[in-house]
Length: 136
Length: 330
Image 1 (spheres, rainbow over the protein chains, first blue to last red):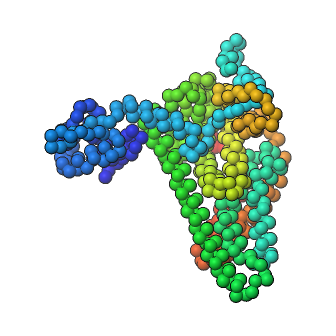
Image 2: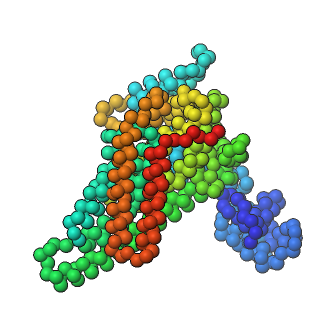
Image 3: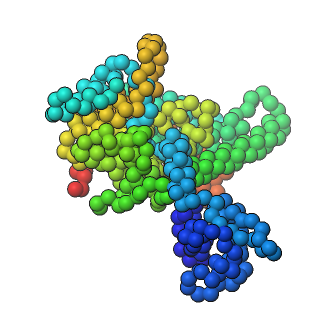
């Protein structure tokens, strides 16, 4: 297998990524034969594409339903949903000390004295008067 | 096991086990940050190796009033048990290490999708996360980079943003993520059994923040801008606690005060350099004893080679910690 690509926060093989792009492009239910016809580059074997879509279903990226004697497939999530999901996970992970080792600043419970010191520091050289008293 | 061996291993072991408190009492904040960080690092290495030597040693110490035969078979059983425990401990370290690395790569993968990462001018990739929550952090590893939220950037002016980025880039450049990872794996693997490990890992993390703060200050040519960025970020993430119960430790407050003090103090933080250096020397002796003890019960050639490598590593680290800083390039 050639290079791998990032799709939906997962490492996908080149052909997997290509199939996903295609499925997002069309948006409709697609059979393996539709995919075979639409895939660019050299001709792929039916079984190869079959394997790929099955794997993508297992990864939760494609969903399938029975259509006649075979299955048809479409994306389980829109591209935007995938990005939103990734963002949610990023935000959740930002608090995970296992994932993030060094924070610029950690969540803080500050004493009144420290808060006062922080305000003094923050205002120290904001030259424009009357502005910026934003923090409460 | 002879009394001398017990003393040789036991004495330094005690030092390793109280090292975070020794540092806090004697030279934290009064010796160069790099020296203090190395002290914690060496102590963590000692703690990591400790179970490997403590177990065989415990197995070898036996009441002398046992008959020769009974003690001999007793020793065999104890040695086998100790070896099994050592293997279990190594497996646990491996498992914790894998878990921690996985969490980081999962986060990196999600970032690649969710955040528009782009290489900053001549620097590492900077991911911008669309979130109102103010945060910034460094992610190590191959897919690593600097991660900043809109929320934090919107609080800061241009110079302060540069200061935050300089701070995070310093972490990356100095490979702090590897040291932090090490500290976290050791403290997680030892857990509550060795309270000093968690303490040492936290102290190491705090000291590395100080180093990054200082690097940012020297890059910006001004420390006030770093302090301002810190203060603004802290104010935004502070949950102001109304109840001023005197004994309550404010979460994160001690670390932040320490960083601000280090950042704003005038250059006089070399006055305990000698003491810190001596402490590192003692710790080195302790580490050697621990490693020697770990090698001693089995001692095939491989162990001796490993011991030599560890020796070289310890020596190099210690020398770096106590040698005067070279002027940073550019």
